[in-house]
Image (cartoon, rainbow, N blue to C red; front, side):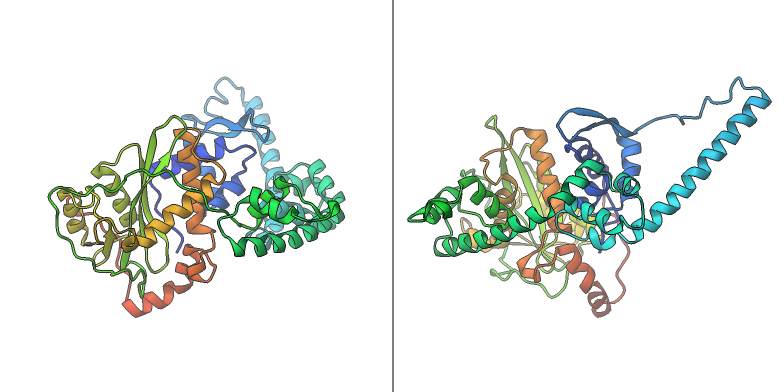
Amino acid sequence: MVRKNYSDGFRRQAVDLYESTPGATVRGIAADLGIERGTLRLWLERHGTGRKTAADGTAARSPFKASATSPTADAGADETPAQRIARLEGRVAQLEVEQVKLVTEREILRQAAKYFAGGDELVNRFQFVEDLSATYPVKRLCQLVEITRSSFYAWRAGAAARRARAAEDDVLAGRIRAVHEGDNTMGAPRITAELNDGAAPSERVNRKRVARVMRDNEIHGYQRKRRVRTTVPEPSGQVVPDLLKRDFTAEAPNQRYVGDITYLPLADGQNLYLATVIDCCSRRLAGWAVADHMRNELVEDALRSARLTRGRLTGSVFHSDHGSVYTSKAYAGLCKRLGVTQSMGAVGTSADNALAEAFNATLKREVLQDRAVFADEASCRREVFRWLVRYNNTRRHSYLGYIAPVAFRSRTHRRYATDSGIIPPRVQEPGA
């Protein structure tokens, strides 16, 4: 089920993501976040700064900017009747032209859904223009999907070379996988050396090409992670039973959750911290929070975020490690108010919370890739926010049969709703 409630922080992060991403488009960012394009436009008009980042990284003017007054608020203050009539007639003519344009665009976009369901969106835009170029002008199509005509014609001219290169990359990917399956700790440099060992000069491959093909095919070598202690046992030793016993499954959504805190290393030596709440059934990240500390507020905000996403958590189980924030009286009180039963694994045993640990490892591996740290706090928050939203909306999960958590939830929602009765309305947290 698509999320309908968005916090003010989520909206502002979405606006920041659009304005800070080089060459970003409303369509592209909205697709990444799993929201309607009109919704993102509305947020940009309310919270936008009027600036964005061009494709070359330079600052550019954005068509969206928050404004307290209407652009026509002062129009007509000193007009004569004749001038007013002339202005309004011009405005009517302009609106008629815009209406024709919008009707045409609507007809074009009706045919666009199959092109933007997944994969490389920029390539899909080019293919969309190519397929409809016999019906509509190329100029109009390029404007509609926000690409330049020169880029489209360059893409069209390189089609044959692109197909040949893709075929060669597929063959190379097969060779890389064969090596990687023998030793999954190998990265691009070692795999390149293995492929070139004893190969003829014409068969040798460049390390950058191997890295690109591995990246394109999601083949990763092992990287040792810097150890940061995020689990600090509570001195009081609060006793909470392990209700999951390493069984990270659930018959329906909103029954079992797991969560953890992980560090996000910054280039200046500091860390941000991410707290998560993950549904064991759909593997959906129901709630999360990022902060520069590991106080109780961090995990409490994550659980409240899950409550906002799901409407209510009454009767569910939340499983974590024995970190001091999870064993605190404040967190236990919040769980009680929300109707959540706490569960905890053994102290110092990461396998008892393996689902949350695996999620954290996947996030760092896919976001940082070849980097050891994030450049700064702003870029860290931005990149992690993008990945978390993509994880829910578009990233295919092996446990779910290679569909995204939100899609899995949508496909199975009707069955779960039928089994459990009418879904209760959203409720406010007691005492909030």
